[in-house]
Length: 351
Image (cartoon, rainbow, N blue to C red; front, side, top):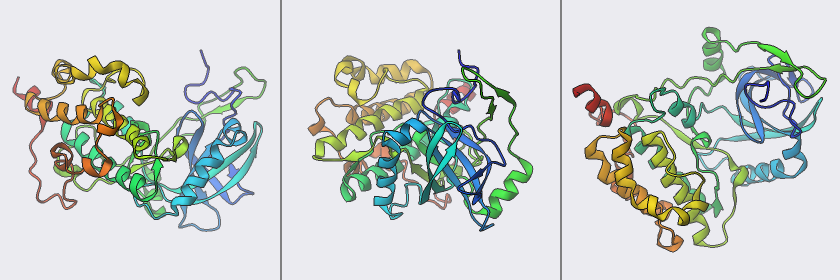
């Protein structure tokens, strides 16, 4: 068992052993704290020492991802989008950083906020979110995928909860005000692990976006949803290749409303799990997380995304006219939305 509670800093992949107050890019940036981490990188909030109005999210790739070209490929994709896709984190540049583990490619982005996965897991009673919140997220993702597929011919390849972000605070003054009341913690310990070097153990502290897993329908009307994680993205050669993102979207919808995966694996497992997919309505009911009135439409949407024949799947654009998705495309003003406590929440209150 790893002695590190988050990224294994002694791993041969070579995570950056950073901590608050560290300097990056020849002292141009100061590390404020850690926002999160993944299989190939960790993400840090950094302040530009030359511009006090500039606080960014720095995605620091592992040494392995830097050396094998994975990081460079992701950088190329963000550069290719050129900041024109408003629902993809806005790329702000890159540099290389030398740590005791080796060379890390660092990508800079406008700060967005914590992931839908963190939001989901904040519900300690089952890890699900209400149907109205899942619809909102899926509707935005369908729109984002439609643009990625049609305008940029990119297959995302990683449509999952940890790659979906909900906007938090953007501007430096708001971030500084937030950190005054919720400061980043210093390293909790220094651990050697498998190596002789002591590494700082730093806890991830994503900046809160103010939404709760059970936020009512009206309060999420203006929530902005972003899709990140282009590390698995690739140029699509034909229309069928884009449909794997649609399958992943269907699997994500099931996870969000039940708190459990429909089956282990991603779109590669759809054909092998045809029987399970056929029981989606039954499984939604058995989960106990979704109101009976929401089961048929939710099951219908999920099944529409999980046909094994790729040519039979809807495109991202076609999904936008699906009634379940349309219901998630709420007006951003919030005034036109009634505020019932949806789904299982209402059911639990009346039991």
